[in-house]
Length: 117
Image (cartoon, rainbow, N blue to C red):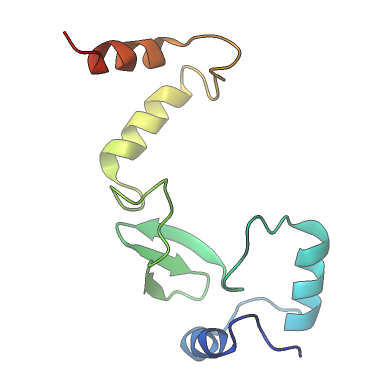
């Protein structure tokens, strides 16, 4: 097994949470490298199944404080009830309206609210 990118961090996570993946770690890493985009990078091989507030849950049932909370949840945490309700409401109307294609009503409403009187 090759050394992880952050060996000590990976080792500590391994002690904390044994993966539920049934294939060997090397086979899993090989398969994910071939079929899943890495994006900017991936810190761990843990599988996250949910999040609430500042915590994420792993596939093995552990709850971890999310020190990496990205731009999507940094202010409200994971699954904030008001954010979830607003997203569900918006999904009934339109899922993705690109601003470079045309205007959409919510963008114009927010623009009007933000403009000085």
